[in-house]
Image 1 (tube, rainbow, N blue to C red):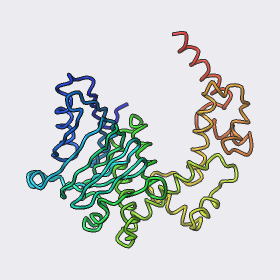
Image 2: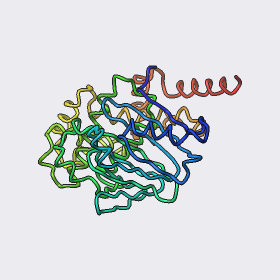
Image 3: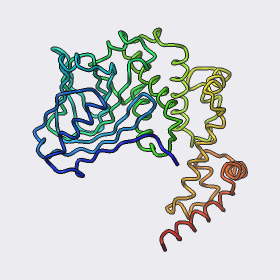
Image 4: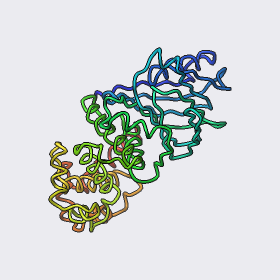
Length: 333
């Protein structure tokens, strides 16, 4: 299958003397021209992937300590006019804008603006982040409004920050499952998430378009369903009630997503995907099929079997047998 455009940089594949400079060239292309320094430049270590989602770049990265600096001179020379966000997964960082320095820790999101001077230091320890480069033109929020967020500490533990972190984690983990044609759609979803996050920080929701509000709600609902699909009491009215909206409005939100998937179908799809995973897992081979269905939110064994067969072409027991045979064949190969 043709996958999303992706580049990988592993410093271990280069001679030690070439690692830091080669990576600096990549970062200047991915983000913007910057001054970079590190105590470990002579033998630098970094692993980075760069995913292209339409006009937005996402890059999971882990590296040794270093400092980035964007100066007025570099800005005058070249400005891609983009906002940068980094989700910190391990380590810490400090962002200096003018006279203000803000320290960020694990599951914080720090931001910068390619049009403004800044200095970002990762501190004394290695870091792991997911970076995002969003062109200002793609963000459904006025640049002067979004710019007021830059430099603030944003938590990724709750609210829109947590939803953005979940989205980035899913995209970077399963990047090979997406086709190039899906890049623009992923880019649109990501731009809406960032805009909603910024607007929430500023309490400036009135500056967002109704379309962005709707898409942000759809994402929140889908994340809620993913987290709670195994609850057999979860149904469409319960989903609507959890989000303080009517059932009819919930249906309308899904209809406007344009992929033809209803709320009920999305919920059942999550349950079936979980059951399929359990049936293929050797650790669950002694668990009866009907128990797996019940654990994944199906109240009736017959309904589970029928839905599974319609989705995957085999009854659950037959699918389990096929998966087991494939595992054994792979082990003997």
